Length: 544
Image 1 (cartoon, rainbow, N blue to C red):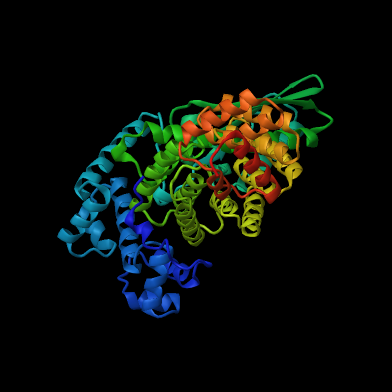
Image 2: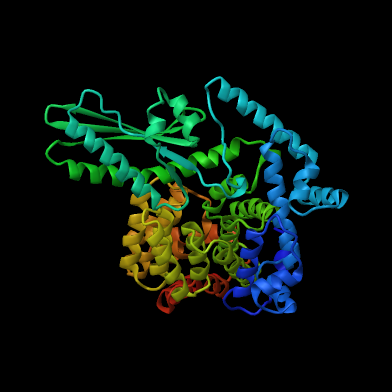
């Protein structure tokens, strides 16, 4: 895949932590989107000379400071036009965000987004009219809000449990359960949790009215029932716009153990809700027309390709993510996932220039650190990049922060498992891969986790278990052919020569020019692990 020129400019920059002046300047831009800003203002905000700020922006962002500032404002203008507000005009919105020369603005806008500003405004008005018509019919409220579209988080309203015909003590339990679930979900930074206020609830008679009042994309609803000494709690997650059932479960318990039941329900709901919403968000983005995709939609579309763990899918993901970065350079998640994608090309032998891909991944990871320092998914992606680059101390710090922010993240536990396995701690790796499976058992990256289990068992010398897990990975998802780098050696260790040769043949078909040294350069395992892999591949006939 051809990398955008903006990325190539900083590939050979000296490595190091992202300069504070870049972060200060970006924060200043965000606070002053309606003001006219000059280079001197940005240099003063960054507390460095203008020349230094230009150098650091080129190295860590891939654009000049004013180029970044222009791209950021163009993205905000597009989001305002897509709102389709009544009476809004292209010239008024452009002037509001510092574009006084309409002809020049229109050209820059068309170059950035592939359509004219008036076309965007027309689509925004049509969408607003459609949403208004649906809302007047009581069907849906659509996606309404004052947040920036490209940076929005999916919103979920946690509604009180239905408690008809229950004794007062159990109604109090239902209220406590709702508050406990909402509190647990609030720890997930990528989710906006809404609780209806009493005055809202007093006027709500059905779910349609709930969606109109609260304006949440997803609804979490529960019902509490009692039979004798037992209680049953039924929980459902619904898409507010379509009423589609996304997830549901039921929990039983004794009325004498209400606290234990509440803990089980809260843990089960918090564990299940985020993966379910992520899948719904991906499907929602997939259904959109290409011309309606914003940076968030493009990032959601990229997620399945990122986790497919094969170079072809990774390149598809990078195409989407680089489009998102061109539309809005200020969205941290698309930048972080792009960093992870470039690192995957290196670790999966999917590129003739693994060193260049790693440098590009590290550069993008530093940029993501500036844009989203406290986002658990951004931290997890950065951990993956630094792990693949062999910077285990940095990766350990990042994944600890990610898990502190969201201890239910299956992806974070998966990356922690890989970090432990690469570091020569196979038992800790197996434990963390197990936690990843527990928190997100239907994740698209399950095959990658199975490979992790297999590599951990290989490191511990348990070759039969290693082979079983790697075979399971290929049954789950046949495309990660790179697993044969280790699987072929595992078969050889088990004295299954025909299976070992077949695995090596599959690896050579996947990467015809692969050598032992290229395998060693791509993997950050311990010297003992890599020594066994190198000797095994050499014995099977892979060129040095």
